[in-house]
Length: 213
Image (tube, rainbow, N blue to C red; front, side, top):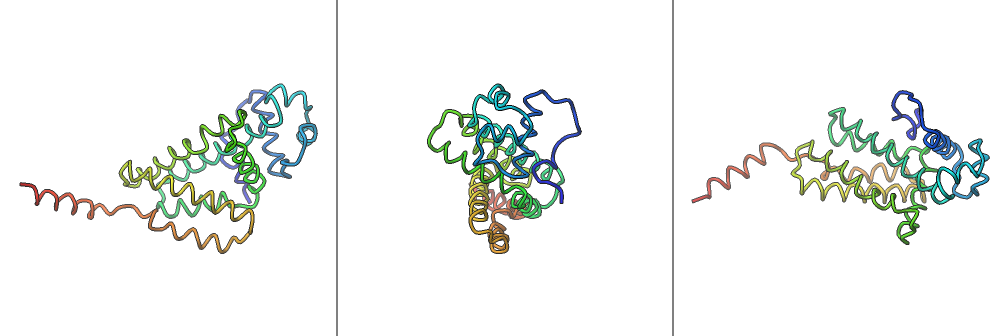
């Protein structure tokens, strides 16, 4: 099975030392998780020193935030790829759910919710996370909805609802592992993901014109 964390990576290009080290940390997270590991233990898992991790990321907290930010960016890129496929919006939503609910992503998602909890407390090291955790996904989802015929204001409402539901289902999945139930629950989003009918919009416009003096 293709690893959902890494499958959206572009063709290989030379990486800066920090980026290469971050990639190794993400790979280690996908293999075993490291929420409970000390900085020294994380360094050992990725084959580096804790001093090097501190040099590039400032602290253990800074490293965790950088890892989560990178994984989130990769998942948005994956959504962008699905959107570019011109597939049906319902098919895109189902495919993306299957991607983010893949068991191989569970360690990254547990870490995501841990960092989210710290962000709720306003920890300074979560500043970048807090600035993107809603806004960046909102932009991506608005683009998706508008590309399928929704008006911008309507697209924004649907984007926020979809984001909230997806995160709630993921949290539920991590606690219960009731995949079949949650796959079925996702289908309740069908009305949200159903694009407006062009003929219906034209009918409303025509009706308004007929009533004009």
